Length: 176
Image (tube, rainbow, N blue to C red):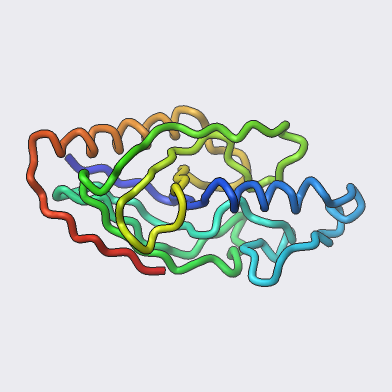
């Protein structure tokens, strides 16, 4: 089985909540001028200046018994995202303790343009990976649909269940 997804955005529930709060707490005037009160080093776009709902973006490849993520630069309308984490990890099927879908339950008007509502949530036994990871197919603005999240969830489910018939050793690597 081979599945290749790009761009894939990586977040966590606490980070996603923080990004939504930064946007929600800004007045309409601050939003218009991009004057968000972001924490230093928070991933963002410079133009239009806004917080991002993810802290890493890259390519997710499922192949040869491993799920691999490697960060790549993210762009929106040709503008590069700033302060994204350089994240890489590899997981075997047995490294995934739990997975499922996660839906951001916040009114659309209270979220930044970069927000994704449907995510795939993964809990891993690999040290170095923070919290439960949230993964979503990224892109420009709100073009991420439920069907893309379902395709990603389906690929991860097929990968995880392959552990029942495969004895692939776990590499246990994460960096970022």
